[in-house]
Picture 1: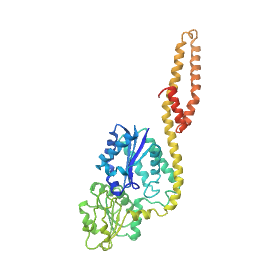
Picture 2: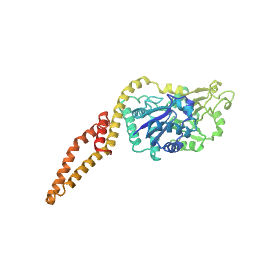
Picture 3: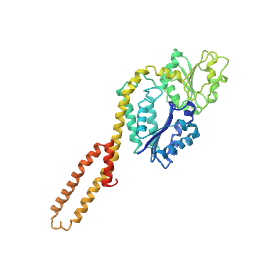
Length: 420
């Protein structure tokens, strides 16, 4: 088993590069197919959010696996490899496992301890299982990682005083516009982030919510999923300039590689002090909008500042979280190693039975004078001797599975008893 994690995230890649390798949810199946087209990749799970695109694979060989996954990312996203290769974060074996566990625990998120990543990882794994891309290697890994992420939040304070990106967005808007009753809110983009913001806005109160998206069907679906009674409607993306002029609050969260809102969409002055919140990376709203009279533009930097209030307390909890993860990873490795050692134990017992049967056959003529009951006793006796001889080695192999000692014992057993 060789688990390799390869990707880019908000910590190591510029926003423009990160956005160029983002993989929309409706293209994940194609991405998995591309990865599995490599002779070196046996299984794959792809996680792609606004903050990261990461691929976890079970590879036959590390270096070949790295090159195949790197090239596949370029093909999947249509981005030249030389544009993103220097930002690739590559992890192997235990480092890859620990990175995934830290991810599900919220330790690698832009908002420390946030909860949304758990759902994002689970959806990525579900997609991989549906497409037959995840199996005996990655299924146990993701199962243990998700359970450890929940355990960290239960047993530490890492997630206390933490809001989701969507909740933080609404809080930030209300800080600058405390009374939203009767406000006309325009949401541009209804992908994962936009849909979350729409859901959070639906709980605000008496607002008139308008949604627009390049693919109208996705915006329509988002509206259908809002609570009954929500005042929400959809306009075509082509109608964005008119929708902008009518809105009091504009929140934009598209995956566009370039700005989609600039001063040309506005009049000589923003009506009634319009408030803009740009959740996109790269930015949807051109900086010049903020210089227009009456316009106020908030960005992800403002959002993160709000969301990370109380971050020092959560950073103290991060040490406790990491201690739990060290044990969780050890538990995972032992559980996997026990499964992996099972074929070796089977080989040992088959070897013992083979030796016993051969010896019985060799002495068959000498045993001919025995009656059936005596022959049965000889069979039982020899089987018991073999079982007792192999009992202690089997116990030690199981007990030490997942440890350096266990690996040494397993290697010795393979040499002594043959391959599984």
